[in-house]
Image 1: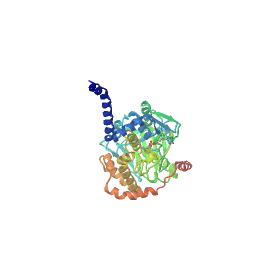
Image 2 (image 1 turned 30 degrees about the vertical axis):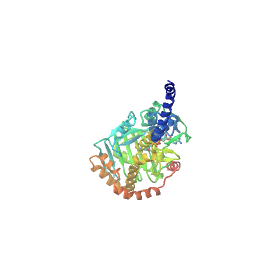
Image 3 (image 1 turned 45 degrees about the vertical axis):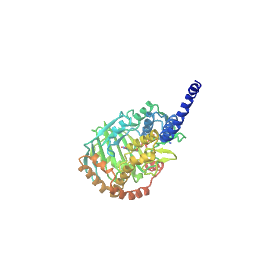
Image 4 (image 1 turned 120 degrees about the horizontal axis):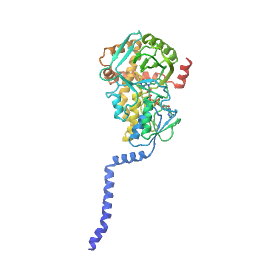
Length: 408
Ligand SMILES: Cc1cc2nc3c(=O)[nH]c(=O)nc-3n(C[C@H](O)[C@H](O)[C@H](O)COP(=O)(O)OP(=O)(O)OC[C@H]3O[C@@H](n4cnc5c(N)ncnc54)[C@H](O)[C@@H]3O)c2cc1C
């Protein structure tokens, strides 16, 4: 009886001790998993700060908020996309296998913003020869609006983030302690664009003009959608000639398309491109053009901004290494686009004529471009030369460029 009483008294204590021991042993075996979970649990209590409410910062914010993390975004402007007026930009659909809208849908960003698919684009060379290039398998790009209009990509991302409980503080150019993701956009100019947005009476059309005389080492572009036009010259060199180049672009497109712009407003901006050893800066993740993540070949940076914002959030959610994620997902594509740019810059207008002929001959330009963004042996051989060429190129503070562009 005494023994039974003793057993009954000791049993709960023994079970407690046993289960505690098993927990300790278990936690030793399960150490990495337990530590990660605790970290994610602890982190989810901290507010994740993001500097910049551009498309990269807001994509990161949305993915974090969807996974239960409290997020605060600090934006220096009074609204999102304050550096854009309300111009059109193209969301490219050739650098990856997955359709860009399907990717957005997969990461929880349903395309409820204005977007118009295009399967045809005119390409014009320096001799004024025009051809239409086509993509059959899927749209080559989707035209989206940037800026203040309520159906722009930026406004949609903002409303989606707010819906998920993200706090956005406007007029806050901050780099405070809680910043984990830097999404401040370009910090210097490697390329500038100068042009206008206006109203026109003309059917929808996209044209790209490849001629170093009107767009040194880049291209001029015309986008007409729903009676609105964005026309600009993008330059990789001779930034001081931006206005003059744009005036030539206007003349050329008027002669070709007969557009007469009404209610025109200027559009100007700059882009930054870089290849980095690390996409971390003092423990913070650099995303989008803050990191120089941009398409070297044609300057289509939106997709890079969205993908890198998503990967930064994913590295927090899953406790993964951001550098490894970015390098695994983007490095070959970035290097490949750099080699493409290097080749065409070296060849100049002759190279652009060949480029256009290759586009024209292709049945499906998306598939051709997909190949060009892939990694090949010859790209590996040319990459050291392209890297050296990039390092030699001047990358100038935007303030100085703005002075040059406006003084011209
Ligand atoms: C004229 C022009 C035309 C373009 N056309 C195309 C195109 O057709 N297709 C395409 O794919 N790409 C295009 N691009 C490039 C594309 O717009 C960019 O690559 C993309 O917007 C980069 O996104 P981001 O989030 O890195 O930066 P952004 O969209 O620039 O956002 C950065 C945000 O950070 C804010 N910020 C800056 N500093 C601070 C700070 N210290 N604290 C808080 N907030 C800060 C800024 O106000 C801004 O809102 C174009 C660019 C220009 C200039």
